[in-house]
Amino acid sequence: MESTGTERLTHRPHGNAGDDDGADRLESLSLTRPAEIDVYADEFSIYAGNANKPLAERITRYLKTQLGEVEVFQFANENIFVRVMENVREQDVFLVQPTSRPVNQSIMELLIMIDAFKRASAGRITAVIPHYSYGRSDKKDQPRVPITARLIADMLTVAGADRVLTMDLHQGQIQGFFSIPVDELTAVNLICAHIKAKQLDDIVVVSELGFAKRARNFAELLSAPLAIVEKRRLGNEDRTEVMNIIGEVGGKTAIIIDDEVDTAGSLMEAVGALQDAGARAIYSCATHGVFSGSALERIAASALTEVIVTDTIPLPPEADDPRITVLSVAPLFGEAIKRIHRGESVGALFSSEVRLVEEMTFWDEEADDDPMPEPVRVTARG
Image (cartoon, rainbow, N blue to C red; front, side):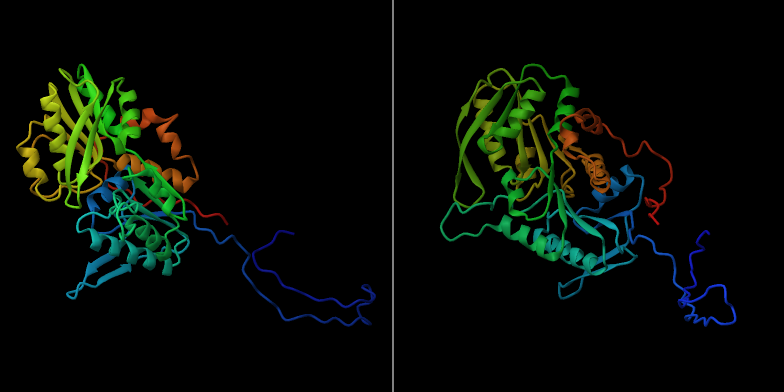
């Protein structure tokens, strides 16, 4: 007999089942209950704080979905308020929030958002942090100083994040500060595809020692030699001094690669040293365009041919130099989010499927003129 979803539970005492007159039958109360189903919501949602909402919108456009509704604002007393405007119970939630300017406000927004979604019973919370601030504070290199990169990792974990998705950390060992899974993407392949499209001749990749391993991979992708800029940092004032250039750069097109352009002080030191060494043209490539302090003025007055960054951090309004090129990492983050949700390999994007990542460099978000579809929904099991 096929179940109808509700069943009548009846108790029959032991006795002669055929003797209808002599057998007492005790029928229990009629208990009605719904058929049991798995409590499982196979849905994912993407939400954004205020640090880089345009990037979050590009990610959802790539995934052909929409941003979820959440209120994130600051009261007059500078206290931050977050309210989730829709049901997220048991959903796979991705919170897009780089810890960029204003850095400390962005960090607090992210922590409070994580707490809000945890208390709203989200099934899993992934903090999508395209740019991880305080990355330089990853060790005790002076007496009585903090390791702030570890502190931020601890706060994210305690707030309730289940995993982190980020890009080009200042140092890879920052992943080890977390007790939760960390997926670190890289923009090296995107930038490499952009450089390849220029068909430059006789190039040399230039990097500082701290970025040498990733720079070596970048140089191999371009089939170019690698030169190292030897420098030292002067105190805590974002000032550096170039000591030497190890490698041949004379008469070549130099491609400087780093994880970020901050005040551009180190960059200008490197540009000057490369000019003195006879470099024919100089390009600067970095994942994160922080552009703090006098960075934009220094770039405007420099001999750089082009500065290539990504949109992990929104450019300041005054960044109107035509030599600054911004590549979007939205397709890469979108693909990673999709794979994390499905339980597929993210590392394959940088090994067996690197060709897909290179093609993302030329993704045109304006090419798709179709109206925005409904948010992604996968039928729940039941």
